[in-house]
Amino acid sequence: MLHGSQISLLYLCATTSSGGIYMNESFTVEEIAELIRDEGYKALVTIDEDEDAFISSASDGAEWDVVMHGLSPFYGSISFRYLLFSKTDPIEECNKFNNDYRFLKLYRVVDEVAVKGKFYVRAEMDCDFAGGVSKLLVSATIRRWIALLPIAEDAIYGKLSSGLESENQ
Image 1 (cartoon, rainbow, N blue to C red):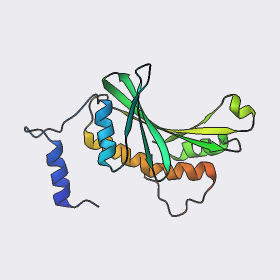
Image 2: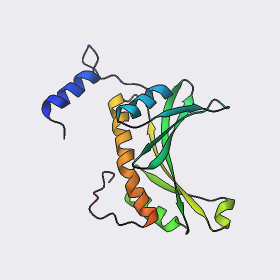
Image 3: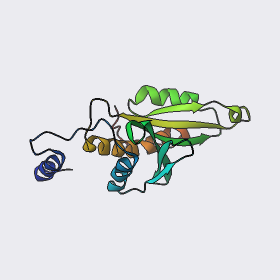
Image 4: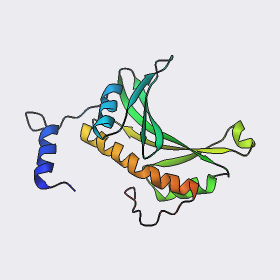
């Protein structure tokens, strides 16, 4: 829990000399990676042969990626993505989860692997920078993503999630 002086310090760090908050309509892949590292997680930047950028990270044993959207080097949005694997068709679990939660969505991926009795689910959450967002908002989105991953795992793997309160409703 943040106290008054901590909140004041956060506000001071995020404001311009004229009192406004720094708002960005784009971020570089390195800026997003640094925000992930600031939250205490690894952030490995990769740029593939098509010059698409993404960041690999992990939290609580879950390995996930951040995909950059827009034109390099200044990206206009990001998507957090995590794959979950299921032995049974997870469509009902995905539908229930998507009905209950606003920010994080689960998508059953349909491809030739599913025909063989194996399924996977893509957990995804977006952060759009249109109109300008602060680094504080992006950091809060990273924390929300990490907090929601165990709930998504519970939905697909059928673990009990009693005692967890949703930050997403």
